[in-house]
Amino acid sequence: MRLLLVFSCLFSFFISPLSASAPSGSGYKIEVEIQHYDGDSLFLGYYFGKAQYLKDTAVISKGKFVFQGDEKLAPGVYLLVIPPDNKFIHVLISDDEQKFSVSVDLDKIVSTAKFKGSDENEIYYAYLHELEQRRPIADSLKKQMKLDSLHAEEYKVKLDKIDADVVKVQDDVRAKHPNSITSMLIWSNREIEIPKFEGLAEDEKKQKQYEFYKAHFFDHFDLKDPRAMRSGIIQQKIDYYLQKLTYQVPDSQIVEMDYLLNSMLTNKEAFQYYLVYFLNEVVKSKRMGMDAAYVHLVDTYYAKGLADWIDKEQLDKLLAQAEVLRPILIGKIAPELTLYKESGEPINLHSIKADYTVLFFWDPECGHCKKSIPFIIDFYNEYKSKGVEVIAVCTKTGNDVSSCWNAVKERGMDIWINTCDQYMQSHYKTIYDVKTTPQIYILDKNKKILVKKISGEDLKPVMDEIFKSEEMKEKNQ
Image (tube, rainbow, N blue to C red):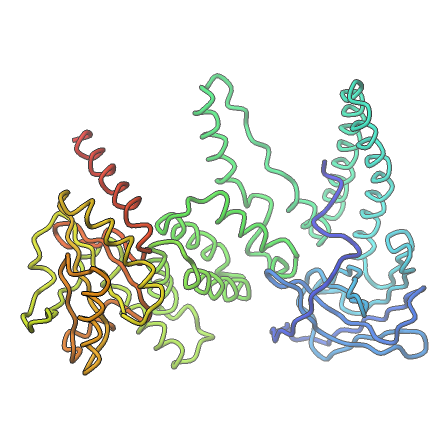
């Protein structure tokens, strides 16, 4: 059913301050009268990306709330937020309608809302009124269909008729007011029509439909539109695209983040917001290898001066972190390390002859390390005959290294190569970005990084997948 937009006229609201630039101009003035509301304060909020934010506050005077400012508001969907439970009423603000008045009864918002000086809101509420008239009928038919399954098809026909009527209303609005915010909202919520791809096998048909849907997902939503950031829709569109329609692997995510950011280049506010958002998301991500996305975003946008809002100190930090991560991305040859056994004998990482090398950074006082070690011991006992070697690096330094060797013996870790770097001559903590322990890398025979930063519990299933992948490669050669 297409009866509903993503909005509800009454809904819980979370308020958080945001400093956002607004276009210059002669300012804004919004006068509000609300029947059946006896409070003395009203807030003006707005959608921005993934949340709603507070813009202005008005105190009642002579029966009216007046929001007023010297700078024009950025166009989009705004909210008259009603304390104390933060319910809200939508108002639309276009670039050329910044001064208007509204009168509304809080008990019957859609049917009573009256605007002066705002064609945008008259269009919007006329459309909502059309939906409101049909909603009770649709709800009643749905209830009857659940109770009377024998006549379900009859109810479905009636519901489809209402659905078709709504689509006609939407198309009429779009035809009469193609550049209105209401038209943008309607079109953004219209589902993409997917071809049936008849005549294909079922699996091939589903693949074709998926590819078509993804390729056309943003046909109805213009990321370049400056109203997009305050639409209340953009975040769910982007999240769905990246989380549901895009493979959850770094290479695929990078390609689609580039596609989205390039689509926003002329919409600077959206570009800035989502470049920062994507960078933060990849930093927080638990998915393996997403540091490659971090390096890509820094190299492609920040290093090339496209993030012109960032100060030099912050930029230098981002660039420095990208340089730390670059040599240890999956697919890179692991940087060489010279480490030391208990006897003081040096050993080079690249000198270890093994089909696979597990590089394990740990600390005797680390609780997660203590939990992981038994799993790594079981793993090593099972896989050492299959060409796997473990080199453990205790991260204690100075006089504390004695605790390394005591823990090695106490925990049964003396079955593999144990090392440390008492005086940090190798700088491995910087080179391998070892900020916390445990840290586990799996390297191939050429010391190329295959897997990184997994738990000890995951070593067995991950190594099994590596073996399967190698077997498949051999079969296909």
